Length: 512
Image 1 (spheres, rainbow, N blue to C red):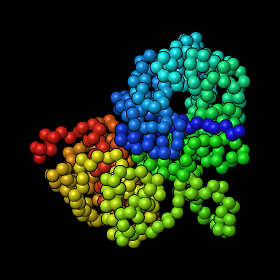
Image 2 (image 1 turned 120 degrees about the vertical axis):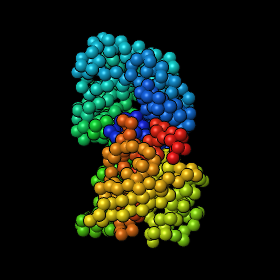
Image 3 (image 1 turned 180 degrees about the horizontal axis):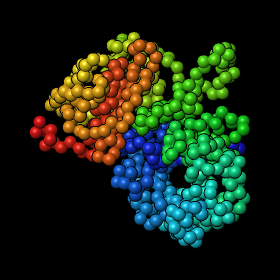
Image 4 (image 1 turned 60 degrees about the horizontal axis):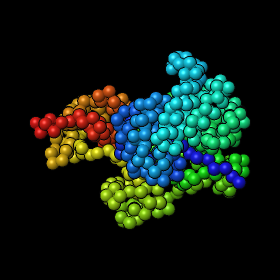
């Protein structure tokens, strides 16, 4: 009978540790809802003691996300564990995930603790966590570089203390598949009480082996895999959930393993996470990249046209990359549009559908045919971004022998603020005018633009990141006009910064 593995998704914790990624509460909720639709078993909502924001997001996930376990990471200290329980206690299935480093290099240089001190701390803190909830996970940080005799000893002890899951992380992406598989097998064979806990793995991708190492661990008895959407995470990232799952599904003949992931939700999940984090997916990325199902070589094209399996080992539809089944244009109605959103995996409120439909009709007036990718860009553009300031109008004067100038009118509730500015090019001028109109001083740290689809009328998607008050905020904008897309993206980033740090005071607005 096939074994079932569990997927522990840490996109909202380790994934958010990707440099430049900073998700707000509403964005985390959107991703968590989609992860629940995807069918993950555990969502690690964050690190409860790290910040008030992390604590609040874990608590909100615990109260609102059903049908999935909610976990909080915590160091092996009383204060951390107590705080983690405060955050996850409302979940249907709460989990406390505590960790301590066990490798000689970490114990000596980071913890400055002896082996015995680490051992005693691990056991005591698992007991403390167990006093709060039945589901306790223990991670031996840097396990792949830990002396095997000590790892066996500490795993046996924490299971005896109440750990239901023991996680064996390749924290720095150092191990290899054969080596890691052997380690998991040795733990199964040498830890006397290993049958009383699940073995989990958490692999980093520093040498590009995170997925291979994870699958090798599964082959050798691991029953939980910790991973992230699109492989996000510290440094080179984590094992990518989409690659783990489709590796298992595509090679059922080899692995003989089951899971509860709805693979048709993979592309939608990838797209949402990419949109909200501002981290694009490389075109040649396995499973979800733009080129994953593209064929340019004549030989490949001929083979696929004759029989898809010649060059496609999985179908686009199996991961939710569907083909356009209905042409949408300016004459399309609300019901057809709403049905298309549902087919694409969106679960939106009536108000969200109405707002998206208005954007769609505006775009359809500019484009003859609106594609799925256009719709994705429209819907994802302003997810979780409060519209404190809204663009009312803008005008740009620019040329190769003149100073670029911009005039923008920004609406805030019933007030319209108009400002003008110059800049080094039309985009810079527009951004300077927006800064003056909103009275938000920020440094532009990232600007990128890409075409969502092909052709002269392609929708342009602009992503910007601004630095304000020592934090980085991301904004997105889409339009067939790249200047308009840029203006929308910059204003979106400013709105996010205001909502999170309260930069603009009511008095400042009124005084204008």
